[in-house]
Image 1 (tube, rainbow, N blue to C red):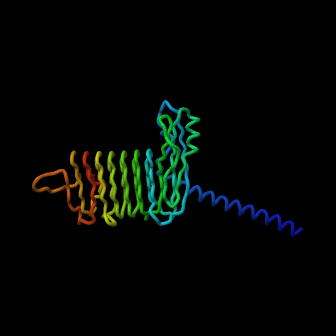
Image 2 (cartoon, helix red, strand yellow):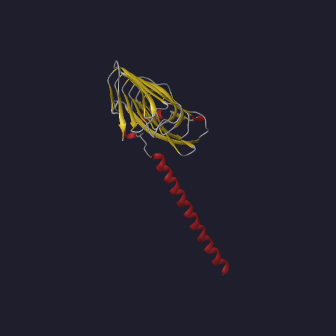
Image 3 (tube, rainbow, N blue to C red):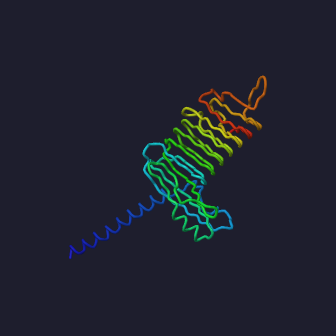
Length: 280
């Protein structure tokens, strides 16, 4: 009798422990999911209207961070967004959009678009595209804060935030947003605006050298920031919230020390205005 009663209590206790562990695991997964979903921009709710059939799906995966350069290629039609986080993993969200003569054909086509993330070289592969059918993939990637990046987009924008490392980017038709970066940042876009948000008291790392050909430049700088700022335009105006003393001929370029000076921050455009804004 005692053994049966003891066995019954043991079963109940095991069930309670299993339920508790399952609940804790579920809470942890929900917490990680909330962290992964924070500030996500990719959505299938913004599909374009077209006379052709279309389909959209978002795929997600997590891979181990190896410490090498994270390479993300938006291919022919896709944007790239990379954000730093405090985990030693790389989290990838890929928005796959397809179009064809009918919705059913577009959905079938999406099954042939593959996301390759081998060795932190993230890109999409798919079938040949024609006049009536095609596909595009945009990426949203979370990486460890201290990561080296190499990003490329052809028809799509590039966004990078909260990362420190050797960062290179190249866009053809798309704007670029750079927020709270550090390290050695270099890159350009041909057709698109360039938005830079600086943070802290000064640049940490080697510096920044970025450029756009056809698009404006917007620089958001904290009030007490220290750096060597170089910016300008060939065809466009220049506005600043900071007091600047100018002697001699006034040109459409500025080269001056902010605060006590420091690392070089360069941001130029050929066809577009430059706005230097005081960050509150």
